[in-house]
Length: 61
Image 1 (tube, rainbow, N blue to C red):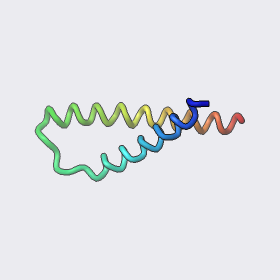
Image 2: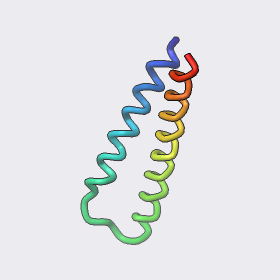
Image 3: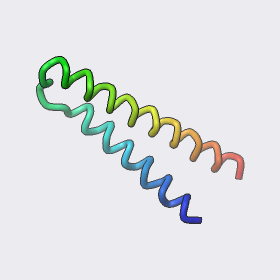
Image 4: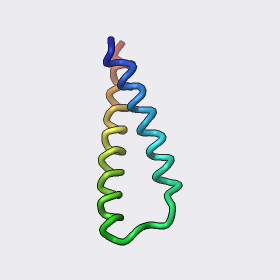
C-alpha cells in the first residue's frame, strides 16, 4: 500500500523535472552539459518507465 502513493509522487516529480529541463538557462561549459544531460536522461527514462508501469497496472486492474 505504501508503494502506490510513492510511485505516483515520483511520476509527478519526473514531470516537473521535464518542465525544468525545457526551461533551462544558458548552458554551462561542455563538461557540465555532459553531466547534466546524462542526469536528466536518467531521470526522464525512469519517469517514462514509472509512468508506463503505472498506466499498465491501471489497465490490468
